Image (cartoon, rainbow, N blue to C red; front, side):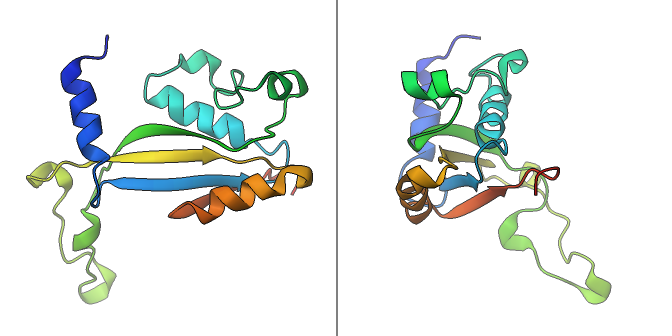
Length: 150
């Protein structure tokens, strides 16, 4: 479906200072699937077709990156994440470790969406300065490890 002005306004409102904006970097060794993970997240938001996720390397926009098949510069893409499940501020443990509240975002008046800027960082040691910069500018990190390679 085409993006409307109302869609753009809603996404822009999520990016205003407050609690709805998160920056996350994706870290890991070379060829462990960092760019593929970002491709899948972008595809889940409808930006690229799901059949191209993992192959397109959406965030590798330099010609050298596409030709060599490695990420050489950190690059970011913003996606909309819709939180499902209990509201994070209501995670309280009751007796027996059970959640004290079963309220979900769907029951709340709050908007359950977050604007998440995902930073795809390089995994090769020669480009470690970009990975460090991505980590320093982020609220958190996702560490990708190839379970076969270790």
